[in-house]
Length: 241
Image (tube, rainbow, N blue to C red; front, side):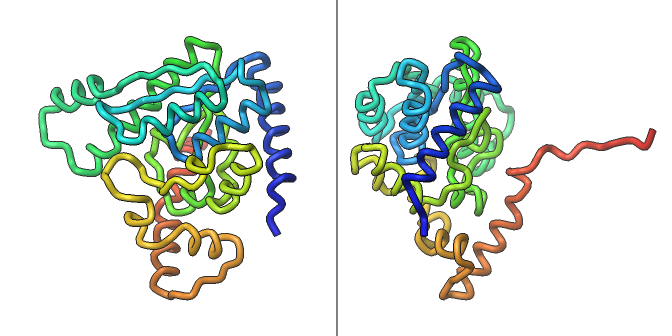
């Protein structure tokens, strides 16, 4: 029962409203990975604000195999963009840490540096940083805390992967960007390989509560529970005064 046109138009209006209240005249700064989520968020911002107020930031870490997809997006939208390679920053941090980084911290370091870069670009260009996560990823914690999980505004964090694809088609994005196999670009595996289930199964479970495999249900429920902290404000102590 998803009405893609209605939701797309409401999201565009929401973005306009956010900027009216939180940065009238400011620019939207979007990290462009070459995947559907950043492509769709950038396209929504263009429709909401105009291409002159959207800045794309491409942040390869050395060589990026799908950098051509990111370039395709910024050329398609005709938006101002920067290519900022983060490899030296990642290597600099890694070389100066006096112990062996864990595999997970090594994987999460680049997205955290990318978010620092986005805020540097944003503060230098009167900007607001767009979060590009979708509901399906957020549901199971498939994002890096203080990396791609944050931003100043989040147009799509309540929209599933399947719904994102419908919106992307309405926005006129190239099919190759909308249906590109999702990958975090960090560990060499697809999202679904890492998760152990497909987004189609996850989306159905999120929207209807229906799922065919009990083991998959248990894994989704577990991931949802243990990753809730990523979506909440930092806990703070409140003294009784």
